[in-house]
Image (tube, rainbow, N blue to C red):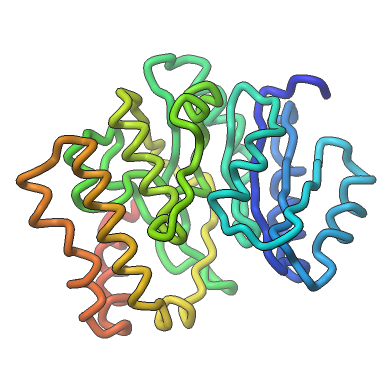
Amino acid sequence: MENPKVSIIMGVLNGKDRILTAVDSIKEQTFEDWELIICDDGSTDGTFELLLDIAEKDQRIKPIKNQVNLGLARTLNHCLEVSKGEYIARMDDDDYSYPDRLAIQVDFLNKHPEYDIVCSAIDIFDGEKVLYKKKPISVTPEIADFLWGSCFEHPATIFRASKLREVNGYRFAKETRRAEDYDLFMRMYAAGMRGYNIEKPLLRYYVNVQAMKKRKFKYRLDEVIVRYKGFKNLGLFPKGYLYVLKPLIVSLIPKKILLKLQRNKYQQFVN
């Protein structure tokens, strides 16, 4: 397939035991004009060998490899370098795209040239059951909506490839190691691009509850920096100063209470 319509980009690190579900969800898509580029970011558990085996059975799957661990931003840029699709779709190695995801999002971008990003609501999944449905902050996010947080769910997003390259893809820096998506979306909006959120869940998003409870404080500090730089580019100051420190404030809330607040916040949107 020389020029697929969609290039799905995915990074993986030691994902041998979880990646098959994600890959199978792409192979089961009703929309079939795609390539899946999976970059192994220095795995030591045999992940790359598994990817090579998978690729032998479906030539649309294209494994590539970083010789050392580079982090998600550089890994996704590596995928972007070899991609050939008109549209770039994101996918994580522990999530599941519903069968009509690509068909719906491609159809939307084909019909709406005024949008450069299309995302969707997601189902939050703990490995056993769907905990709740998470709808977006806004269907058509405006610049001010980024004060609250990222307006799009990264692994459920599709971009116009030309627009993603226009902003040089993902920015890799110390502060973007856990906020590369938030940083990207704000840079795209600062460049005049806009996005849309489909209200139907198109992806099942895996949440490791125990990992959330152990989230390191340094990543909260990183997000403060990402917010400051992003808000500055978007012209959100002086109002933005009230929101820059939000990650630090959130970190003071006990994790059990935070998880309950998040669940209650989004359950009110369940149809």
